[in-house]
Length: 115
Length: 115
Image (cartoon, rainbow over all chains, first blue to last red; front, side, top):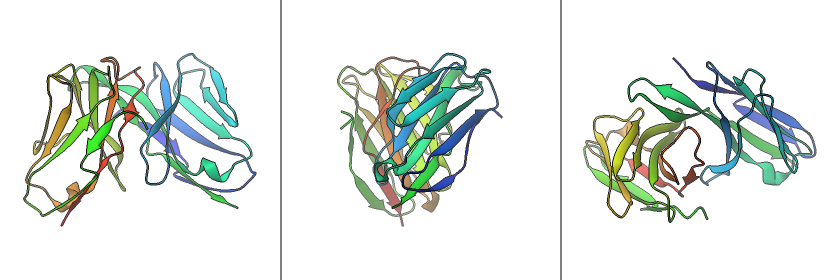
């Protein structure tokens, strides 16, 4: 069935290094959203990408939506301890049971940082 | 602080029991979403209400039910509880009815432990 997949599941990063997490969908998405959940916290909206090939930056975070609108990536440069947490991508997938769209979350990439 | 409130913060109960989780959306938001987050299943969409009416359903068990009241707060009822129902339950809210494009604001969650 339709789903949104994320890799890697875990990312252990040395402070100061860069890393990228990837999100892939089995179907074309109208948009993709990214959320961050700190340990013990709740998901917090980061950004939404809508256009094919769109790139958006938030300080050290760079978000990209693929040309085919089936994949996305989040790249973090110069990782800091404040980047610790789980990053989720989420895309709207059609639910035949309800004949409507629901936001389907990827399994998340959990990031730990070595000082 | 997202503006979404959830009570209680923690809930410990026994198998076979029934519990009610409560959520108050952000001021002005008409949609309420319920999610279940467990270690092995990630963030699973359960159900969405918009302005008092059920809008979309996800993988919600028949033992679970929800409703949204005229003041827009929502309750999630879990009955005949099983050990596997132990999880974090998040409520989220959004302004409109479109789960596919609206930004969702998550509450702090209710941690349910079934013994």
